[in-house]
Length: 115
Length: 113
Image 1: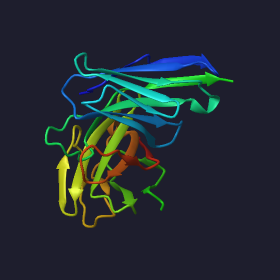
Image 2 (image 1 turned 180 degrees about the vertical axis):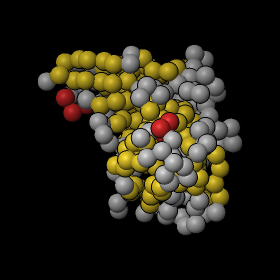
Image 3 (image 1 turned 90 degrees about the vertical axis):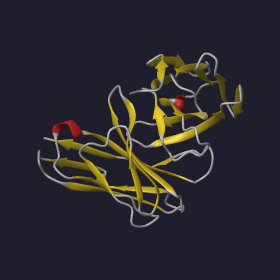
């Protein structure tokens, strides 16, 4: 079963605009991660936010986590055509504090940035 | 470092055929895992391994076998391919420790006719 649900399923914006993607999940988590997938390629890790964190920044990326609502958002500021890709949230729900790589992925948001 | 290497990149099988998808990592990661990606379904965990000789099932293990004889390699075997196994398969690895990110291979696109 899918832990995460992402919305929107697809997002189309102009270069320079901000892009916001949302993720909801069902169970308690240790952390939530965001990955990027370019067409036909493997996933690349973008950012990880722990369950005791509320906000995290990395370059043009800003991630928020609301554990009371079981939701997260990824904001990409000043988007570029090269940001065109699919973005996935993934949750680590293992209760023992150690991640074995058993992540549960959302269905993804397809982002298209027009030049 | 090459990271996580998967072969082949593409494969077409007939129903009932068997094959092995190869995965190797050169980062000395303890943990390795296999996911499949289907349209509209995100990625789902098939099997994972926490070290040489230790494997366990994920969310969708039926029809797949794995083994891990070395730290570097984690092959995925389809014993009798079915059309429902048409998918894109990703191998991933990560370090032992709390809250580590995954490193993914570039995937194998498998079609079962």
